Image (tube, rainbow, N blue to C red; front, side, top):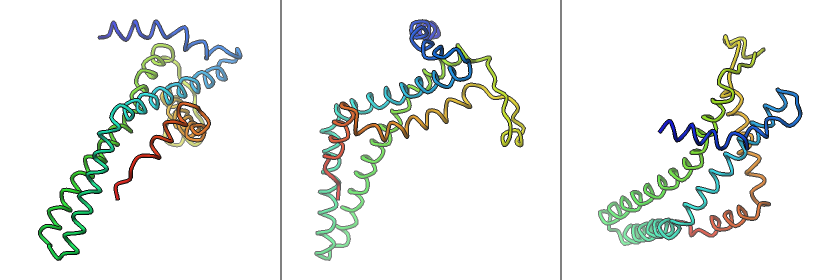
Length: 186
């Protein structure tokens, strides 16, 4: 398995390192390259999750419809005064809602899968590089930090930027429309 990662990082290295060599100013190039890497990580994760949701759309729709059907039946039982029927149907609706919730949570986690690959490549290039830190981090005993310290805030910034760019990007505009068209479980 280690051979796979070594080969993978050797293949992607010339492409990725290109973004770290733009200005000739090492710290500026590092932050530009890390921004591009983090943004690519965001986009790859979003594409994969959107494809998974497209592929499983009928299953997701079925779960939402089942939740709505069970809730409607539970309310009908409650209106008819059937407490035991209401409780049983409400429990079934809650169980189905839980399945739906955790399915969508799993998709959300799927957005993050490219991060370890990006960090693995960064380890090969920046594993021994340390940045001196100052105030306020020096107050907690940090003197030097590595690439992880810079990658994660940049990644979060890229996620936020992507959120605002999504309506303007052709493929993702369609994904947003697909998600908005999903039937609501109510």
